[in-house]
Length: 102
Image (cartoon, rainbow, N blue to C red):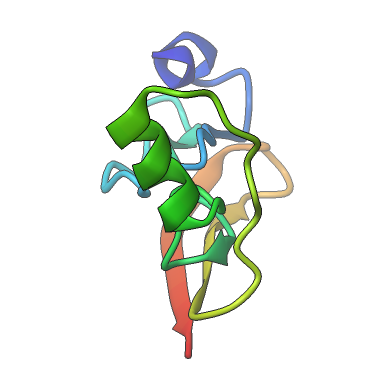
C-alpha cells in the first residue's frame, strides 16, 4: 500500500479508482492520512458513470461498444476532509464524506 510507504513523508495519500469508496480512512502511525479509494463523483445509478444499458448489453453480447455517459438520476459526491498540523505537516484526522443528491 502506497500510504504505508509514504507514511510520515506525505500529509495525505488518497487513492481513487472511481469505484465504491473503501472504509479504510485512517491516520497512519507516522502521521499520514490515507484512504485506498475515495470513490467517484458522478451519477450513482450508472456503472462508473456509464449508462447501465450500455454495459449490460456489452456483457450479454460480448461486443465492444462506445461508452455513453449517464447524465440523469441521483448524483454522488465522494471526498475526504483531512486535518493537518501546519507546524509538523502531520495529519491529525481524516473524515470520509459521501453525499447522495436526489
